[in-house]
Image (cartoon, rainbow, N blue to C red; front, side, top):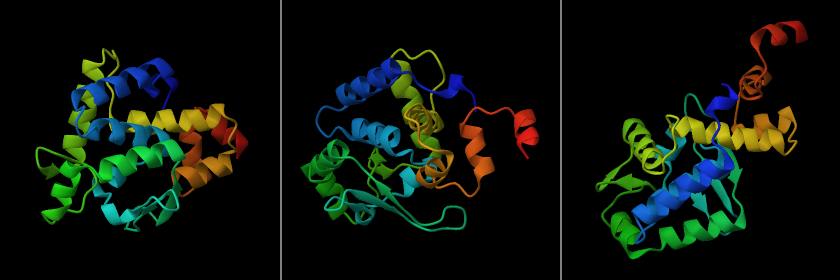
Amino acid sequence: MSIKHVLSVEECQLLLDVAKKSDPFLKMGYVLCKNMLRTGLRNSEVVQLTYSQVDLEQNIIHIKKDNKISGAIIPIDCELAEELKQYLSHPAYLCWISSGKEQVFFINNKPFNGNSLTIFIKKLAFNAGIKKITTPRNLRYTFTYTLKTNHFSPLEMKELLRLDSMESVSRYLFIPNHYLRLLK
């Protein structure tokens, strides 16, 4: 990863503004993008996220354990919790849930999958006038860069990003491989 994969503050605001305007009724895209920018959720975590994993009383998201991602608890700030609360109590979302669906985010009456989420984010970024190709991964990189610029330690970053090793963290710290070899 390099700094070119990170969205600027202005680009983040443009993305959120376009997402909000594209669906002023439900605001699903806005809540989805804000969630990814504030939690660093992986693409797979977003598409698999279910209503039961969101705990708004404790302001946390429970990430399920699977063969790649260990179970984790992700803190969410009060502002994001309030946005999620409004979204999850919206009549359109309640209708979605009452039809037997579990996923938090959906499009065209279907849950997102990795491909549809990527297309959705790319389209929002294009409509926002963001010149760089923007994918869900860019939102995770942006979250990581925010942690770095706010002086989170590599160990704290490892925990918040749910990474297996410190070497994985180094990819997010913009440390070239030849420096990593020297550090070992």
